[in-house]
Image (cartoon, rainbow, N blue to C red; front, side, top):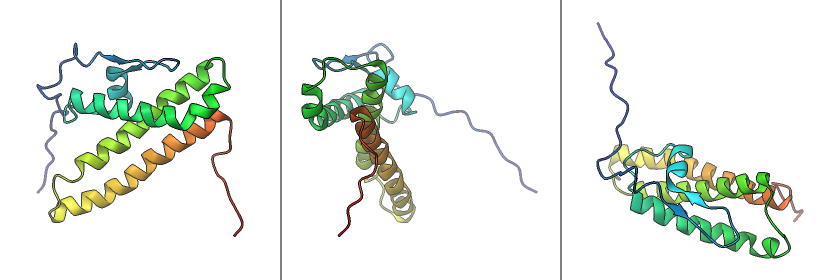
Length: 147
């Protein structure tokens, strides 16, 4: 005989303060990035601290802004779709960075299997980030060259 026990949904860590987590990262000429919105979109629980999330989102904003710098210089303003795509690029770059950081904590047998699964997830995050960058610029998502 077997049975299943339902466990409670993961609770936010006591280190997560909703007031502190309601910070906004502002970069001149770019949409504001809200930590609570990012946490919700990326479905991050309390294992990711506010400080780590803030740092990853800042790094992501810098990377995305660098990628779009030449394109942005020719634009007067971002339209609503481009604003949403920008946030998508920042969020998913940050998630890839967070996954890379957290996978090195447990590299025992079970940890190695999880790391392999997360490698695909990290690649998926990077793909979503790249697609958002291409979509903002109106470029195709795939470039093929004959060798």
